[in-house]
Image (cartoon, rainbow, N blue to C red):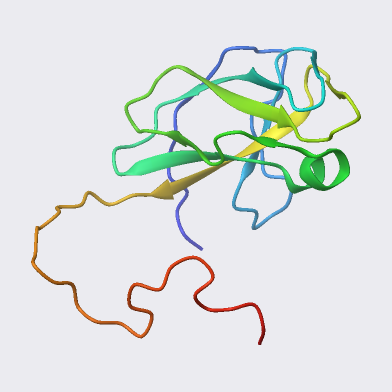
Length: 149
């Protein structure tokens, strides 16, 4: 078992539960809405989640949609994934969008609206070159591997 990475967290809304894993082995923790909201069809809204983090340098947070909201209600995130850099100290928010063409979506205070995954991101150094090494894929882009088996 690996040692957990320590992430200082500031609860900006102490009445809400802290982000937690739903199941052992999950990659993401649930983020909750701090307020009631109504999203009309195709409407988007910045929804605060009531926490701020101090991510260690070399790590980044990624705010991702919840699959249940997407499947059951057509609710996603506009900027999925939302990126949280290690030097950001403000409140984490989710940019929700209701993609259902007919039904409003009601967010209640305390609802789990997104998930947060924290991952290592090593520093990189870019080197300008005249050519890149060859690969089997080469420059094949979107759809280059086809749809069949």
